[in-house]
Image (cartoon, rainbow, N blue to C red; front, side, top):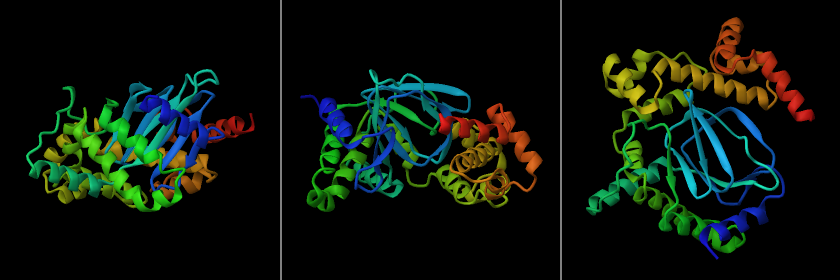
Length: 297
């Protein structure tokens, strides 16, 4: 039996409905979909999303990406994304694993690897954006993921070994196809990551670009350039997308439109509605009504 077959069996055995399923391991969730799910606004915190079967879509600042079985997405920053799966069917189900990445653990491992003089493979060219990156499973990653998921059905082993197995998986990412990308994203002194963490933690407060630049120890011009290189968005675009994606998620979870707008820092409901419609093509009310219809059907 291959690694992917064994991992798929574990996911199937532990998911009895579409959506996310807890595993008992902190930060690790399984998911499945047997019906199409349109791309919807979400905010990814630092994470890995590994697919055992099917395909997922991710839209970042208008750029559409599709990844499928034997691949994983690495998102090292808090990022506003639209995600879904348009091809899931009972005959072609989506099965996968969501794993929260621990930034401190990633940084410690990256430093430790470098201190021992072991080279980390660079990512395969392309832009220097730190927003997301995709990689194929290699043997080290697949074995580490299987060893982690095998703890689901072993409570005693899980309580003793979960942290070590998670560390092993973090290490596999740093040693794998996108190791260079991960090292850059989680490296010591990554001021853009710190600025993004501040944005994510303070969406309901006024956020001035000059203040973010000061926190990063950069001039406004340098901060703007490096921020856009890292996220593919300007700081202003990023803040707006984070606020609107979070508001959309709140509305989907039952918050009123006005509550969602206030919670992410909008003082003017009309401005919130305009910017929401500009980004998603429909007003917050239309979005809420669409969600209500989807739930009922």
